[in-house]
Amino acid sequence: DTGVSQDPRHKITKRGQNVTFRCDPISEHNRLYWYRQTLGQGPEFLTYFQNEAQLEKSRLLSDRFSAERPKGSFSTLEIQRTEQGDSAMYLCASSDDIDYEQYFGPGTRLTVT
Amino acid sequence: GQNIDQPTEMTATEGAIVQINCTYQTSGFNGLFWYQQHAGEAPTFLSYNVLDGLEEKGRFSSFLSRSKGYSYLLLKELQMKDSASYLCAVMGAGANNLFFGTGTRLTVIP
Image 1 (tube, rainbow over the protein chains, first blue to last red):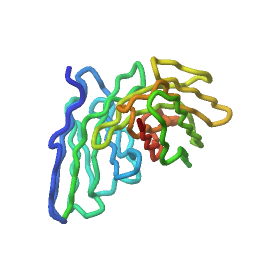
Image 2: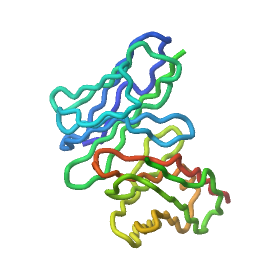
Image 3: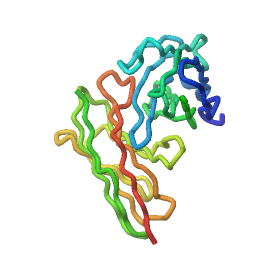
Image 4: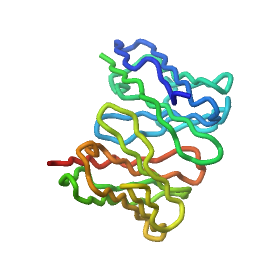
């Protein structure tokens, strides 16, 4: 397994457009997390899946944000009506049920112009 | 609420030892993590402490005192490639996510 992968790595979009990011976790990991990171800050938790169930969502996840993990494997994060404040690195991580170590993907850098 | 404090920046000399401190106040505790993050890259796992004491892993060691809400990461025999941000993160009661500090940017100089 090559680790957590994310696509695309970079996305530039105009304000008001919708964007969708994909995350493929490590195959045997049933836990999947989305974080957002802005320059000079640590990652901020957005949402968490256990298999296909979305069990926790941060207050940061406004109604413009939606995440899915339909078959308990890959996940998508969609941002509707993007705003300049959405510009950030969006990180996906996965872990198993045995230890809590989260493995991060390379991230998707979103720039909203 | 959740609060994690760590120094913003540190500088150390190649070959030396550096200690990066982290204090935390969180609702619930299921362990403390240290991650390394090079500029423009994803965080990579360094250590995990859930019980008090010192965990050693090669040139890196991490210490935890739960009663004091305190941890440190110790880096020995510093190398230039250790220049990075070091993120302290706490797993809360639900064990469903990590709460990160803002990170300590370490610069290693010759």
